[in-house]
Image (cartoon, rainbow, N blue to C red; front, side):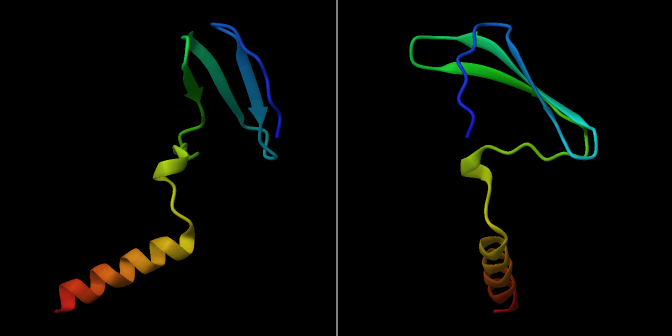
Length: 71
């Protein structure tokens, strides 16, 4: 993991293996938080960790929904 100290308006650019760029911008810093902006290609999913489910969990949710609808 790369850990960086950034100031307001600083940018980090990540280049994907296929040449696309993802830019992370430090929009605002506060005493206990930071606000970031992420500029990524439209076909790139950007998710907060708490919104991301591993594929096996997604499959479990789908199966549960199917069972509930079938009942």
